[in-house]
Image 1 (cartoon, one colour):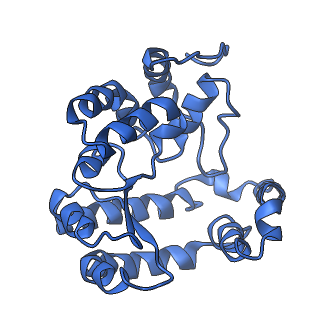
Image 2: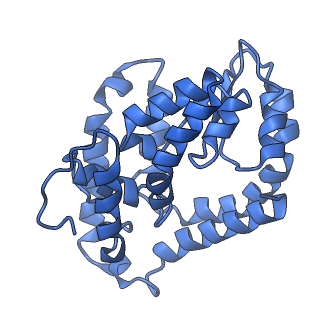
Length: 249
């Protein structure tokens, strides 16, 4: 993916985010119950982060997550700022990584670009003090074969065992085994991109009997058009035991 393609993709994502909160495009944003629901969701998230908030080392990250990512407030100004600065950051990132890789308080990077040249440039900066992790499920196998330390994965939530096998094989240099597992996971990886993250993977976990498919508004459950496909993908996973749900199809 070229820099221009990446910037275009980023622009589309930011446009989707703004549209999702636009009351004209989506009248649900005007529901009188929405404020109460957001307050309830914020409280529920805070309760689930009790252990992190009690840990002095983890508290700043937990507070950032709860307040600046999922807090009960208007994020329209944040989204406008992101639209303004992120394209510039995408151009500067390779040089920025090079400058920061030796910083004593920076221990690694999640590189989510499926750009082989970019991945190679970042992997060249790897050291015992600086790890490189792929952030793209579709290309993580090749990234690890090329020297990346691992992957921060979306699809692995629904298939942790196969993804562990993929990581072990790729990091161990067993390309044949890694490619075999990668092929077996391809349908799941493709499915997780069918709708904005984490909608598809939440539905997959629901099919496996883990948690609820419900998400924080404005995100909704996986659309009916993809549910039968999701059921097939989950049923085909090695060792999967799909739960029986009346709404799974």
